[in-house]
Amino acid sequence: MIESSLQINSKLPGIEQSIFSTMSAMALKHNAINLAQGFPDFDCDPILVDLVNKAMKEGHNQYAPMPGILALREKIAQKIKSVYNVDCDPNTEICVTSGATQGIYTVIGALVKDDDEVIIFEPAYDSYIPAIRMHNGKPRYVTMNPPNYEIDWKLVEKLISSKTKMIIINSPHNPTGKIFSENDIKTLIKIVHNTEIIILSDEVYEHITFDGQVHKSLLQYPELAMRTMAVSSFGKTYHTTGWKTGYVVGPKVLMDEFKKVYSYSMFSANTPIQHAYAEILNNPAYYKELSAFYQKKRDLFLNEMSKSKFNPLPTEGAYFQLFDYANITQEEDFKFAVKLIEKHKVASIPVSAFYHDKIDKNILRFCFAKKDEVLIEAAKRLCKI
Image 1 (cartoon, rainbow, N blue to C red):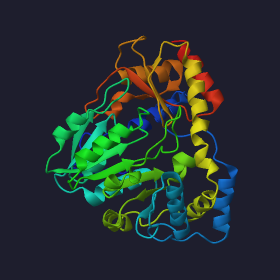
Image 2: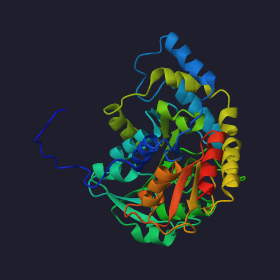
Image 3: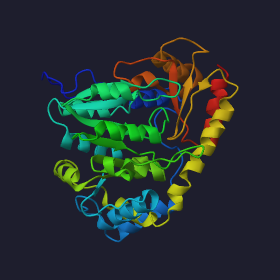
């Protein structure tokens, strides 16, 4: 062990290990079913693995161009045109990143300066706040409440000031599964009209929507597209979260700043994996069939949990299901989640972890991006409580 007497003035005081790492480590320790961390426990299509191997054997093993290989950027542009009817310039408006979280971090790093304020809707994905603080920005919070997690747009308007630099949007939303409605988007347009506010749109679950819902990218709205950096994830779409590859799309004036930071941090994403995604994007069935694929898993899990004392909340998209456990206990959600791991061998995420002030509503998040037999066994254990 390396010993040190150094005293460090932390840039992120109060920030501890992520809740995902904590609960996954506990799940491993107690041999519990891991419905905590958001990743599939099944393999991606073998064709995609073969395409990566093919790219490696063809010699695509050195640095890719900083914004990503042109073939992939062109395919991304074609996909955006096909899905959202939006034209994007693959040369100036698209950058391939080493995962969506890295893309989010770089957007914030490139555009948020000292004392800039960033509006966040909570519960929120836990990477937003540390990235803002790392760059001396100030988070401003809008709380969404169960069961429907509607946005209080009047509160958003009150928070807008000359210091407001950015609003972070996440739809489909992690952890709630909420999808931004047309009314939400129209209200957002009114709020940012005639301002210099930038929007960071986290759209990593764009192809996972349920019950006939359709994801609307902010890129589809000219009033928003001119100020939006949209982030997407190949990992979520192709069941390859460990490959850590995503992309960011935005207007050239914002992308130029993004690339300045990206070129001196990551520089480029994995080369052979980019070639594989470029080829597999030729078959749109992969992302067009994703909603039906995950809706079957959501419905299976809900059906298996129907005899439990857990109360499901509405889930419109993404691959998480929230459950209210107030019928079981009023115990704090973190303590109850630990008990589920230790006594019942099922891991979840306490939703209080998605609030900066740890608001506890007796709700847990379960990931249903798992094999059917795993979901059935997890539900069986939870139904015994």
